[in-house]
Image 1 (cartoon, rainbow, N blue to C red):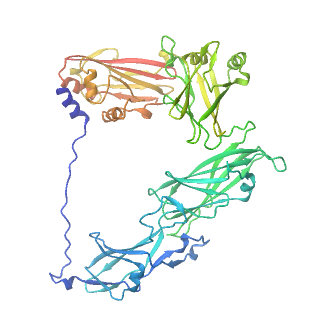
Image 2 (tube, rainbow, N blue to C red; image 1 turned 30 degrees about the horizontal axis):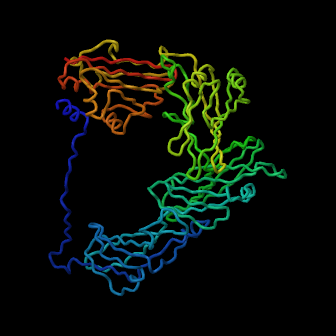
Image 3 (cartoon, rainbow, N blue to C red; image 1 turned 30 degrees about the vertical axis):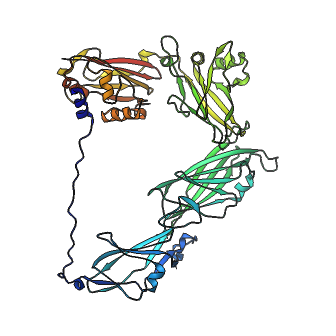
Length: 581
């Protein structure tokens, strides 16, 4: 119980204090006579207008116009101090009123809105919503005319246009039509080649990102030559998108002398609540893509390749002595995860190797893999040795290199590229490059450094003699960046069962905590985890907070923190040792 109370006292935050406030009392003066507290608001003659620029583009700000709102627009009048609604009618009913309404003196918010403004579609066609509000001040014994309310666009308007040149370079097929998919959050609209409708998105937050993806079959041939079509997919994010804006997206294409294709989208921004500003120079390069002769342009919805074991496909996979144990077993193997779209399965996978090490190229050729190409759809075996395993995880196909394959790759220092080609049952193909870097040099002696600040890390210290916020600060440095960080806690004082009581374990991986609860507890105790550790070249592991807790438990005996840190050059283990008396 003493251990648990100590942990709770140390790890959990203090209770949150709640405070209340006295309800505001407003005194308008004039005694208790109701008539002396009254002013009047005249609604007859009140106008509700809609900004016309929400539906038409004008080239000059002075051309802005408004039109009268339809009678079905809703109008509410709310007391500013209490948020109490004193009137809610349609605009048509408001116009038919002949008598002013009596109100207590004060400020009132007059709001008008279109019928769909309270239920704006997340994404739909031709569904603009409008809102507007003004403040009216009612004065005692004074008649005040209700002001005009101008309603403005409340959602995000989106239009898509294609230049004639771009249209001419894309053919139209049922499988890969020319189109732009606009997506805000999880909500999307698809604009076809000849789409004339306007799309509208609900603003999910004050500032939003609009993702636009251009897809279709592009003719890679020069003018006059027989057409050769390739499927392309280019994505660009338009940021700082807000409610009340009209984003006009014009997609264009440029072809350089070198054969490169630049797809671009010019974004014109029109705002209906201020002088119109046009982002005439906002030119976003969707892609600068060389259409290769080998057809290596991924089809839309083709299988997506990711790596397991916390690796990013965009980063080189590092093979060094650090990932092999004393028996030669690889502890960090390449694992390919190929995930198809919902309507298909992965049917074939191939890998084509290239390298700056001619010895690897020669070895592949000698093994019968011409130009470094091999089929890895099923288990790859050479002379009775399996070099891959093949399995499934959900709908994904998983291909993992064996320890034998990793040891074989480790024989060839240098940088190797494996182009992974995956095809699904809909005959859609993806092409993804995996870079593998092999470092033959290095070892534990050249790996990370682990130093206990102001102390000898190889000595055992009496915990009762240590105190302060920096009595046990472990400084870790890595020239190439940390790839692994394990913590093993041993000794009599912190037993595995005691550690589990506080959501921890005797063996913990800081880059990949076993559970979200453990990750949360580590953070509450001040430790970095996951991406805060991965790739770090300098890191402090501060266990000073544990020292007074250890002595408070009054459990005599040893307690050790073994730290195993790995980077591209090797793995180093150091143990921080205490004795509790």
